[in-house]
Structures are given as structure tokens and as C-alpha cells.
Length: 549
Figure 1 (cartoon, rainbow, N blue to C red):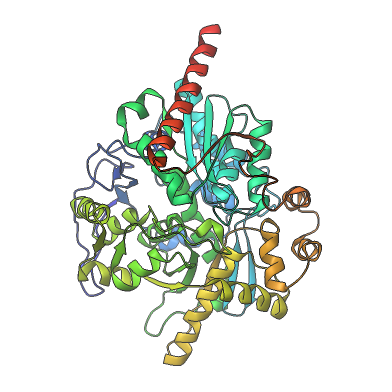
Figure 2 (figure 1 turned 60 degrees about the horizontal axis):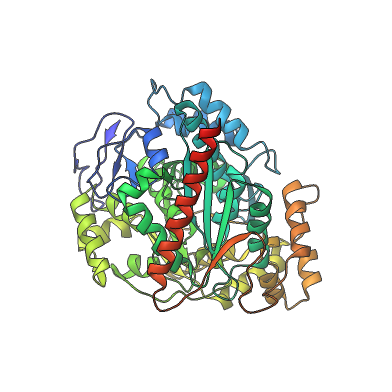
């Protein structure tokens, strides 16, 4: 494969900024860990130095291969993309193993195609990524990751405790992916209603699984998604604790999540109507823009990897009022300690988009020392990117921030115009795409077809649907139900009828939660101690079970 190395401006030649490691390896973006194999990177989650993994080498996809991929189903394309990052002689994951993992991963999805493309206009399509059990795009990567972890742990006769923080969809998707899997315990932290904009359906999805599955554990916190990341990051950064208790991650930190999200880009691009992909003047390359609703930035990082693999796309990062990522791309500055705002798109309510270190690793040409410096600057209050890195990002990634009023208006107007109901996260992406199209029209620039990544099904966000349409809860449920016969939509629809807004009393512990962490003066230390104690409890229970076998 070609070593990682990218020009810092459109006119410079391809540069090799660090020496590529062995084939099919992953390196830490902080540069302080040994290159890891696919299996090692999956099991580690975070690299030992506290950094995220990125492929050490990226092999461009040839035009011939891209053409051959046009006829592949989503599962088959997923296999082909993943195989490019797994050594051919890897004893842990053979091609036959991978085929079995991927086939099982998508067996419970409600659409035979797994991912569908829906046109909103001649130049705007939504890639519906939400056909999995929890009706969120995260089901795609999480289902593959859960089965990959289970396969590796069985082969190595090991166990793993997964620590997960969620702002909404990640928790239920992770729980669903690993419920009942041998050798895996999962502990999820989520912000309680009233402390975030998490919907009652999202919460009920998690508490229901936690009550039903013995290997699933749930803690509610009186704080934001950024707050709950504090005890989790402390646990992962304690190398001895992480090693002793076999901690792993299924957030977008994990390389399987990153790689499966790359598949979305190729699959959706290859299914755009031929006539939509008009080559720009003087080029034979068919280009498209992809609008990416952004929270932690995992999907955006995957988009950069798709670009590195040669997919002819530009990216449009769409944020809500929690616009740290938009401000970084627009101004080159990222400030710490921003207050998280509760919005209509709760899964994007993040002010510390942790995948930003992956973005900056790629944008700097693989300069881990620079990433370490920026991370230190951010910890001290804020970072400022040098002009060459800002320019590199500018030609590849645009951005827009969308407020709640525009989000709700986009949901309403899209439904009025074409009878299609967007969830609020996808609506942020569609609104950003329409802003970009308006700028092109004003400047007389050539229009390019746009794909918007469809994040979730609207039935999970009925209070927001009701607000957008000015209607009652039953009317919102009727609007959001469908398509008919979709087993996953019908199952979540039943939960939606049971879900309740708010709690019956102060201090309420939702059924299914093993604990609730309250926010006092010393909350960071108290939450860290509570998470460590729960992890130790799970490890002790696993050891006791092994001793009885």
C-alpha cells in the first residue's frame, strides 16, 4: 500500500510525511504506540498511548475495482473494503471468517438492501443508514464490531469489558450488538432526561435491553455527554487499569466502526444515478458532495479515509448549535470547555468531537508530534491550526452550523415537498446541503450532486416531530410510522407508545439502570471512582465464574 502522505495545498506534490509501518497495520495518531494489527487495534479500542488508530498505509482503489464494486450488495462491499485493512495471512480473521461475521451482522436488519438511497430532488439524495435493530446508522458498524469482537475473544479465549459513553444512539446500538455474546460485558453511561435532549424512546431502548440481558449494564448521569466522557477517558488512559480489566471501546474510536463507515460512502456514491455524476469541466472524474451530520466526528473521519482511498467526493460537515467542529473548520480554532447546548438533534450535542485528532493527523500528513502539540494546546485552553493545515482541510471539507429553528423547518418543508419525513439529525445535514447549494447558485458555481447521510428513523424523536409539525403526540406517531412491514420500525414503534417524557419524581432511578451518578462539587472524582468500582465488580464476577467452570 502507499504510505500515508497528503498534499497541504492543491498544487503541491504527494508527500510522504512518515515512514509506513508493516502492511495492514494501524498507528496511533499520537505516535507513542507500536503499530497494531487489525485484531490488536479492534481489541485495544484506544491505542496504549491514549491515541486513536489510523491505517498506516492506504491503498488507493483503482478505477477498475471501483467499477467492479458497483454491482455489489452492501454486505459484499463491506467485506471488500474491510479486507483491504486485514492482512491476507492474518490468522485471527480469515476471509471466510470475515464473510461469516458480515453475513451475521446484517441478518436482523429490516431492509434486504441494508442501506437504501432516497431522492429528495434531482441533486439531493439521502442514504438511509438506519435500517438496523435500533434504527440508527450506528447499527451498521456496531453489528460488525460486536461479532468481530466475539469472534476474536473466542479464538483467543479472552474476555472484554466494553466502556461506552452515549449522547443518544450509540448506547442502544452497542447494547443490541453485544447482548448475550459470550466473553463480553458492556457498561454504558448516558445523560438522563432533563440533563440532555435524549428522547424517551432512546432511553427506553437502552433500559429495556439492560433489564433483559445479563451482560448489559447501564448508568445514568446528571450531566452532558461531554461530562460522562471524563470518567471513561480516565479509565482508558490508566494503562494498568485498562490492561488488568481488559477494557475495550465500541465508540467511533474503534477501527471497525471507522472502516464500516467508509463503506457507506462508497456504497451510496456508486448508487447515485449515472446522470447525476457529471464530471467537472476538463475532468473525466464524476464527483459528488456528501453532507455529514457531525457529533463526535467519526463519520467525517471515515469520509477523509474514503477520500484517501480515491473516492471522488468532497465533504460537508453539518453541526447543530454545538458547533465546535464547524468553528474549527471555518476559523482554524478549537476552544476547550464549551458549554453543551441541548438541541433537537441530541446525538450531536457534543462540544469535544474526539475524532478531531484523526482529522488533524491526516490533515498534517501524519505528523503525530503536531497532533500531540495541538492536543496539549487544547487541554490548556484552545488550539490554532497553521495555515497549511487549514488550507488542506479547506479544499476537502466545508462546514455549516444549523440551529433548531432551521432543523424543524427543514423537517416540515421536506415532508411538504416530497412526502419524506427526516429525523432531526438528518435534517441538519439536509439543511446544510441546501445552504451549500444556495451559495453555489449565488456564485454561479457548478452544482454537484449531494448525498446526505441519513442518521436515524424519525420514530425515535416523536417530541421533535410534534414540534416541527405543530401536532399532537398521536399524530406525530402516525406521521413517523412506516415503512409498513419494516420489522425494526414496528418494534421501535411499540416502544414509542410506552415511552414517557420526564421522570415521576426527583431522584428517580430509571428501571434498568444499575446506578445514577449525581453531579455534586466533586463529581469528576466521584464518577471516576464509581465507574472503576463497577468495572472491578464485573471483573470479579467473571473471575468467580471461571473458577466454577
